[in-house]
Length: 331
Image (tube, rainbow, N blue to C red; front, side, top):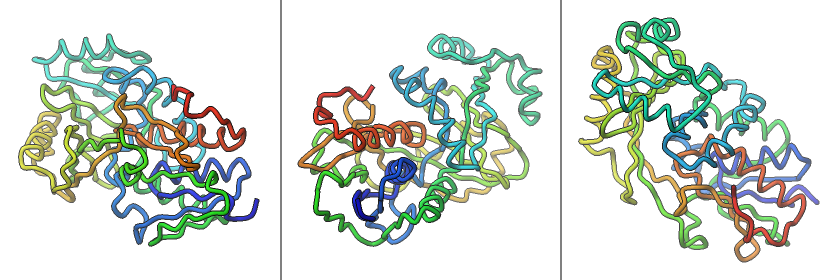
């Protein structure tokens, strides 16, 4: 194969992960991206970056945990900025029953009391009576991770061509489409699920790991990004409206963050963002061959968690040229 033997369309987390995995297995790859710069218009830019397969098991299909768990090792290997300090789940005293129900639906956690919580996160000392600690989970800054994958590709002489959608090749079977919702013309059961987030800055609180607050309306999480930055997310709305963050969502996210710690009440709002996540009816990713093009899509709200698995499926297919791919289950 020559340099342009495999072309990956889309430079979000799905496309870059596929290109990294393919190049690691010896394929000649290039990437094309319609935006003019990395992250521009990509829902990956708005992601939380939590690698939390066992936390996610509490509210999703068991396949998310099973397929997502190996991604932690993948990210540690491919992005040095990956932080593996676990995850915390807490709840106000009035919602203690929700914490018990959460624990019943997942695994690989430790119950900790208030003192244990304070040892892990000193700024949360005295604020919660109990919590769940998932020591094997990890997190990353999605924007730095995308840049890291792009740097890896550059070091391997894999070009990323911005401002184009031209992926014409002599053999159309060697095109991998990772465009998310933009590929819906070929994937009619793909839908958009709206998510909203806030990035704030404060020096009045420090967190070492993602913290989830069980909340009656919004499953809030706060992810530290370093240098006083925190990402607060995230809503999950069955809507395909592309508009700015709603007032209601912003108020609820900020109120929940204030419940976690009052110091967030004085935080500076740096960014409000909303985008649509691509999802199939079962909310699991699919790899499909349509009209000779391989489509890797449907990461839903698990982009960074399941992208390495999706990339592995694409690479496996291209290594074996498995002709019955459409009949295979993703999980």
